[in-house]
Length: 524
Image (cartoon, rainbow, N blue to C red; front, side, top):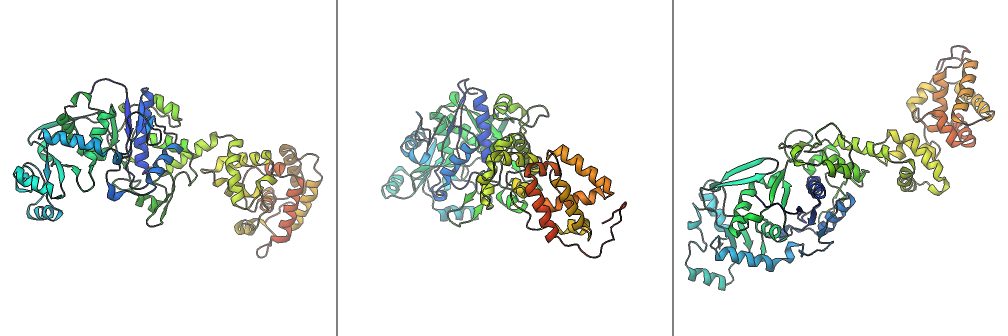
């Protein structure tokens, strides 16, 4: 058991592509735990796999986490006393600890070529490089010291493997799963170091770095649980048992449907992002959707992710970052995987949009207006705010504001054909002309006042209320849906309202033969 000490956690992604939403959740849980315990969080870039490095991935990681409000105390951008924070810049540090393991005979040098390893796998079913096979392979345990020196002097490529002693019961203490016990005989002699690029593998680098950076808790995905016994043995080999971190292996994020781990393919298939930001693949040029560019608010994404595999112990769902920090606990983390309900993500975004003021939404809406050819400066802030205020209850994303509020900013270009067929009779142009006269005569354009006067006129004329009001809406909006009609007209004002009705009279044509108008039972 690790000693009680200051909480220090790390998020250590590899720059091999865009940060997956599962990785974002891991970063978030690290952040919540650290902040709740008055601790510190480090961003470390694990770039030891030089063959899979992708340009731009590191910047993407930093930008994505910054957008979500996940802040670091130390890291590649923040600096700190434990740098460098890129593993590729720590070669000399790792070399020292590789030598330490070799000197203590806890590791050995192996010269097996890829072809030789493949031959061994072909010859032995379920081949594993371990205590049962190592003496038949080309390594410093099976060869003489002279042979080893000769190969090293010749510059022969090699790897350093960890020497796993078989038959030991290795205990991994996990804060979610309890004690997990593994027989060391199922472990192979993992590669710790490669001479080809003078870099360690993940297994060595993360142990050394976590020790030197005084990491108290390693919080990572469930996929790393099979490696945890090896890491326990490495801490022991270095003599670091007393300062070893506590482990937390988070449940996987699962497909919304079916079984298995959430993948980009699921997002492409079902139409939701699996990356926090839009990603442009530098090799293929392919573009992958991001939560930010898809219109999600960062606080909504954070809230949504926090509840995937964790709950606060009650039914509360809407929690900002501060409340999540206050309530977070591994006691309420699930051991089983969490279904990625992307529709629930939309629900969270809807809820957070409703909490924004009309002024905030108007600010977010202005770029969308401009993108659709509308000069936002032609409208007062008050006008835009009132327009978005009327429709925000209908939206899941800021982009939905255009779909629902475009009519406030430009005349209808088309009219819903189904509504025209249902609501526009041969007599309707005349009735709409009458309506314009009534509107011109209004003493007040306040919603309640105008509504009372117009409804009284419709009743007095014996017109069908639904048909007249829907035709009115059709002229002004272009379809028979939207906010309260007289709220719309109050905001638009007399000139714009009447001009749109007149345009509708000119452009909307009745479909087919309609019944003749009858005073008391007007039917369309």
